[in-house]
Structures are given as structure tokens and as C-alpha cells.
Amino acid sequence: MSALAPRPIVRLGVNIDHVATIRNARGGPHPDPVRAALLAAQAGADGITLHVREDRRHVREDDLARLSTAITLPINLEMACTNEMLAIALALKPHAVCLVPERREERTTEGGLDVAGQHSTVAPFVTRLRDAGIRVSLFIDPHPVQIAVAQALGAPVVELHTGAYCEAVATGDVQRAEAELRLISDAAREGAARGIEVHAGHGITFDSVGPVAAIPEIRELNIGHFLVGEAIFIGLEAAIRRMKDMMLAVRSGA
Image (tube, rainbow, N blue to C red; front, side, top):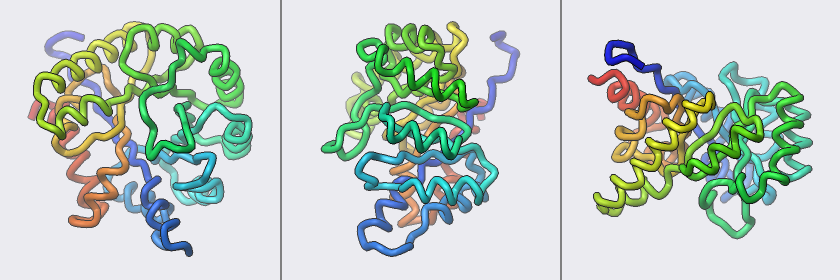
């Protein structure tokens, strides 16, 4: 990319899982994650992400089904490599599926999917989803070996795990944050060089979004928990608009 060429716009995918978490804590239909997705669309989100987990602690497959008919934005389904989740994806055919690691006891996704160590497990899921016309993404740690294997598996997209960087920012560990950001930047460049579309996400806040959004090879950020939490104080639409504005400002150099 020449110095005069404009940087591609970075997209914002809004994860609505934790709206469902609040709903499930009380039972009943409120707050409705589908309503949150509609508000996200109004606020400028470019896509909606949701993770149907084995224990259904967040959204459920009926949420995905309702969402599929309620919005026109692309839907990105995060899922583990299990036959149950594959059947849901093949039945409802979201725009994209992001394959992620999942352990029942974890609070949230901890680390990326080890596609290098689990390539024989991951490969058939990539093939089945791609054959069904679903765009496949692999949620991986920012490491060149993971990217090389993602390419070998035929995944057109990777999403880089930004959790370590965001944790360092949150704790004020400047040296570690700089080191983790370099890993993300190097991985994004490696992915783009291999013809893979690069996304990023996990733990991103207003304080940490700028340097990640500034990486020119990253085409999309997926953010959820922070936006839902910030909505308590400023409202969901306002939180999403502010995040999107910050992303676009740093990408444009404003």
C-alpha cells in the first residue's frame, strides 16, 4: 500500500451475547438480544456477532433464528467445533461462522483456537461450512504458525485474539501492551500477505481500541462485553456510535 493510498475502512461487529446473559439471569424475554441487534444496526454496526455455547449461557439457537429474519446486517456465529453446533450453522446458514475454542468452565473464550495442534479436528468443519456457502473465520492467537495453518486449512478469514494486549492496557503495563500490539500487528501483516482477511477482537474498550483499529491490515473488530457494560451508563446506541467513531477516526488519521 502506497503512502498516498487510503486505508480501507475498518468494520465494527457488535456481539450481543451479554444482553442475553442479563436476560437469562432473571428468566423471561427481557432484555431481548434481537432488539439489541436492531439498535446496533441503527447505531452504525456493520455486523452482529453471537456465540451459541453448549450450555446456552448466552444466546440460544432460537435467538439466532429470530435474528436471521429481523436484520439485514451480516450475522457472524461463533461456535465450537462440535457436531451439534455444525448442525445449527448448516440449518440457519449465517453469513459467517467463527470457529472458537470452548470449555464449559470458562467465563469467556480464553485464548485462540490452536489450529496448528488441532488441524485434523478443525479441517472437516472448515470444509463443511465452506461447502455450505458460509464464510469461515478462525479465532486464533496472533502467531505466524497459526496463520500459516489457517491458510492451509482454507479459511478465508482469521480473527486475532486481542485479550492479552487489552489486559495489559487495562492494568497499565505499557511495556507488555507494546509487545502484545507488535504481535497483533505482525500477525495481521502476515495474514494479509497470505491473502487472508484479518479481523480482531476480545476485551477491546475505548482505551484499547485505537492502536488496534490503526493497524491497516485489520478489516473488522468484534466487540461485545464492553459495549453492553457501557450501555448501562450511556446507552447502547451511544456506546456503539462512540466506538465506531473512534475506530474510523484513527483509521482516517483524524
